[in-house]
Length: 168
Ligand SMILES: [Zn+2]
Ligand SMILES: [Zn+2]
Image (cartoon, rainbow, N blue to C red; front, side, top):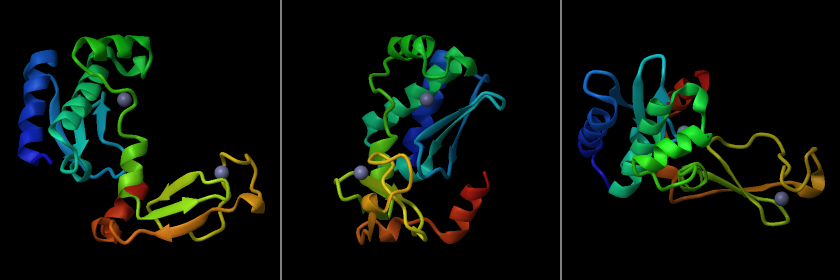
């Protein structure tokens, strides 16, 4: 577990070390499904405050390095070779870290298709969904069965927050 203050000060250190002082800023955002973001237009790196507190120090370090590497390699580099070289050079060891594991950790709705593929949803599934891994088209034979997890219910974001995120 990491405190937001720790994340903020470590971010400032990394930004100063790799990008220079006064060039890029750091802040927290409300994202639920991604750990960090690099805004090239605003020259700003943000980390999800919801996820940051659940990460270990090492994970936070990796998220920050991932985003600093984006800032260093430019928007057009994406996650391509240039970004990967830059990221590795500054100590990033993960691959597309935090996509799956975090979604699966936080999502209150867990679904399973008859073949056992897992699916995750942040909102109550309101219409029948079929497993896209089993069939590209909707097929009732691959319907997903949803269960609401009790253990993450209390961390589910407030409705107003979800609304904000959906409009982005
Ligand atoms: Zn990235
Ligand atoms: Zn499936």
